[in-house]
Image (cartoon, rainbow, N blue to C red; front, side):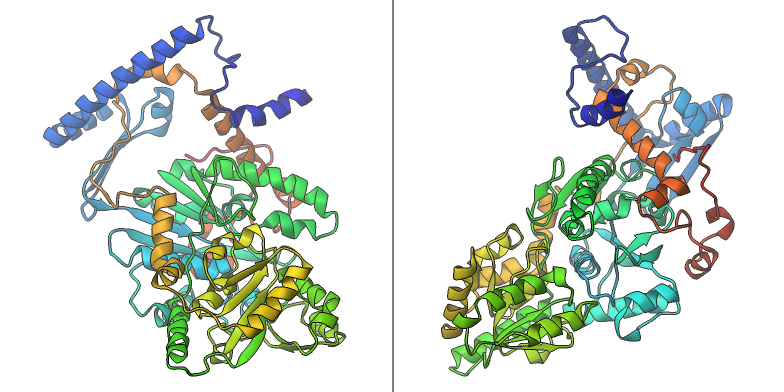
Length: 587
């Protein structure tokens, strides 16, 4: 029995496996392959004929479909005049039993990209800021339609998460804040939509977790492409429609090295072992493509590595002004070394203070300023005060604040980041950056002002070198590589999104019984295993006991009454209980 439980995980990772115990057929592999090829050819030919019929006599096809629906089953026709979208859909029970599917035609409609993320401003974290800029620059040329989907928190959770006592009484007020912040930094009006999903803040995970089925935020007729910023985070406890069924293409963007964080906790190695397989499981069943920002993230099946982030344009402007001062012979950098980041030990403070401590005798006279807020602030300040070096601890500020403009060196020894945003910002401002020779910094090695060290001795040498040298002015090419324009192009290439207008799209399938019945009966073992795996996750995520066992927030299967009211969700439809003994499969 134990072997049977393990084997599906092995099979679904090997779609080309030749094991076919479930087929109950004694034909040879060659004959089966020939049969599949023949059916595929017939399907292609008939598909082309159906497409020609639709394009040449669309009205006749609709009439015929409706007449058949009246005589054989209940039918529904939906027409969206604005998008030129027409759909004829049959009753789901009949369609499933007859292996039939709807005919969809979409003419001259902009491709829709829905970006789901796990945080929002004013929380200044990477998953709040970077997806926001991604949405802005994807819509800048007007070639596609974009919706940014961000979490809405209750007032109680807002007070826990958002800094400086900033809170919002409505999603509209929150949206206005987000748009104003963004447009002040980009300099252009952003044409994307903003939608909210209900979320709750997990104190132990220090993260926002989605509540309910957030795929419902996007209407089916606009479900073209979904971008899941932190796909593992968004799908750990997802219970609802399967992402790969709802959307034509689902792209996961991995931001966080969760395994590294978990290892630092109690029983961290054990937790990391299980989390590694859970992350691989959920991203496989819910994403078509996975983009990892750097090799510092977990290696996921079929993933690619590409830094698809840019920097706030404001930092590039600051860098240009500093460069102009250098060209005029003025002193552009009057201050020495600083570090900025959330003041928790795991964000580089531990590594930084250790490096300074063991090298105090070689760094006499060095002054370092630390800027940040966080739960470990008092401990960081206490540890810094014990050093013989002059290390000053200051409250956190926006990195674009004028107080940072004249610092010459940004020191960042963190190895827990995936691609450090503040490192990119410092380079954009024309500073020298000293960082570890680590996978998270691979993208930055192409820049002249990036100094990487391999060991303690290298760290000391680079400190001395940076103090006596001036930063080299950024080239136009380096400046472009840091921009969101370049990052957007890298994203489109990595995600293989090339066509921005959908002219004709078809989900075939002739309503006649038996048309492709044979091809439907020929099993794709990889697909079957994936479907079975997705069902297991759906079943487990629908049981409150299982959800709590794996760390979900209690009673987070559906939004509470206050969230429904704040977001305008129907309370009666949302307020459902998890039934351990009854599983309903979403279509």
